[in-house]
Length: 214
Length: 214
DNA sequence: GAATTAATAAAACGAACGTTTCATTAATTC
DNA sequence: GAATTAATGAAACGTTCGTTTTATTAATTC
Image (cartoon, rainbow over all chains, first blue to last red; front, side, top):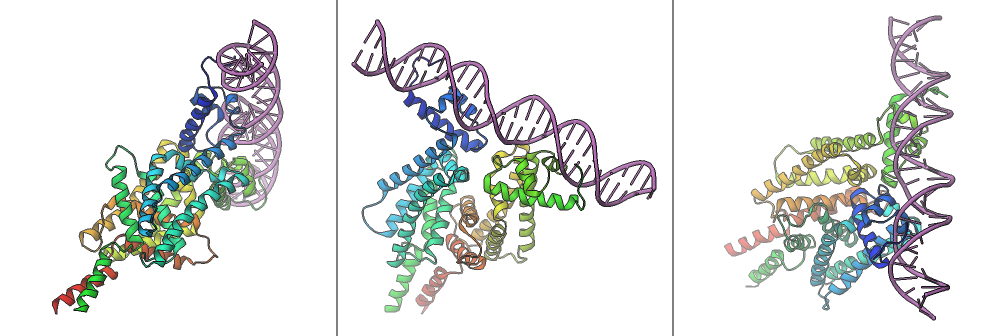
């Protein structure tokens, strides 16, 4: 009939966020009811409205948190030097690790955009676009420096992001491969895809030149 | 109050399928109501149940149709010769064309799997797995023949499928690039990714050999 | 041209939805 | 230790959901 002993707003909000991410990732935003979410948290449905004014605000808040964490993580992982290949390596490794560690939240952020109203959608897309621009810049810098061989910067950036985000579709921890092994393989594919000049091709080009110079 | 003049079951069913794909792709399966769908078709909600026993059966039917068309299209596009690189080229080109031409249906098939009951889900996943196996086989054949350079066949197959299916996320017809141009760029990326022996690397290897042989 | 079948409209069903209202209790403030 | 605030439970609100029932009409069959 009332507040229970030991209850605490801070802990309750965190529990709501966590349960919401799990449930929405599994069943989809529209399919999850406020009662179902409340039951998962161990609380009445009305209590949820102390923390989030509406169901959509809850969704928006989860997505915003996810995107801001992603930006912050990349900010912390970005190397100081400005070698484009090193930056590309850091970007891919950070992206894979971040998303693998947050599979459910990533699913929510990628699949539920259509459930947001216009304003909420715009604010999330702004964050996403800013993040994607980081990769485009790296690719363009690398191409300009002659270290990467790229047809179309924008298109290649999208292809890489789709490829490395797709890891969460099939990757399961505790299985055949570790995160580090997966990351190593995807890094190798990324470097080939972009024609990064650290590979066999580069050696052969130099070998050709040396042999001809004799 | 009753059947209207000129109504026809065959045409109505096709109209339901088409409207359902559009609406579900835009708003999501759970968010689309039977009344909304009926209104889009220009029919009463009850009429939908003459064609599909439940809402979920409608969804399942849309997905099954999509997956079967995909398999059939690939069957028709698969080259007769057994050069793995030629087969890989056909696979990627067919996949991109098929999905770009069916953006909405692809979104439905990729995003609404979680709305299916166990049996319906299993039947769709079976079709999907069979299709993905085609690519894995091509990659393995190519690697065995020494024409492709691949770390992990399964992992590379997933990466390629994620990459080329991702086209539908950003591609819009009537914009900067045509389907053929996009396909050409993605084909180039695929060939690099798999180290296909038709590229510069191969030429350089041969050049090295020739120069040394003098 | 009567009988049958296919296609639809209209209305209703119970269940469940997001949200609000209100009472109640634990914790905090002064 | 009284007053206030934060957190919650319980019940109810109006709406809408997927689906069913029933009646009616167009098309087809014989």
